[in-house]
Image (tube, rainbow over all chains, first blue to last red; front, top):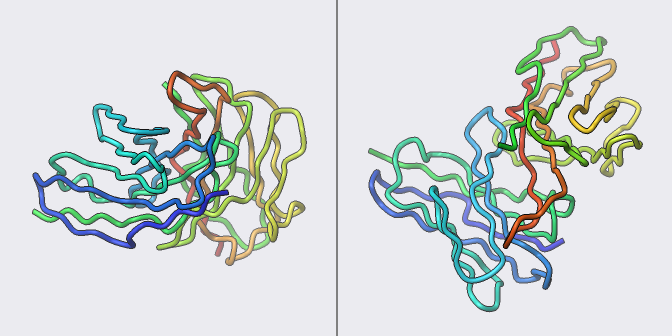
Length: 110
Length: 120
């Protein structure tokens, strides 16, 4: 299982773009990168998943460089409601993406 | 789509009693379900993996006789905390996977809302 490393916490202000980077130096060829968001006392919510280059959905973008040893979750124009913990996981499938690291605690300020 | 529910959302019980938590996939068939535990200010810790119709696989350090898992159908898994004690108080979260990949993606875990267990 590829180990991931993320910043423990980040602060931002409403309306700014937030970029959270995850390092996964030992990512395997068939591993995907998945990001989840978790609010207090709630289960994690799937945000985005990618394998290479760039993936975008209605919530976020995921940038993955050619060597795939890191990835960056980009949240455009954050609001107070984006305050949460964000987790990055890597693995070839759901059954092999079960190790949650410490995540990144994002605080969005007014 | 991909909605997972848990019941109850919270439970308070006396020490020594057993508590059952249900996890349901509402709009898809879950070939595999996972149970996690999360203590305050900590990350999720995987407890066990269950496949429909077979015995659950427990992580190291998780007592299978204390945390009974049953995955009787493709939409329902239950976790029973037997003879609960105050140290079992935690936030229990299940997730489900349908085992299906879409273009450019692999199969994904979808999480339930969690169950807060407090043992007095």
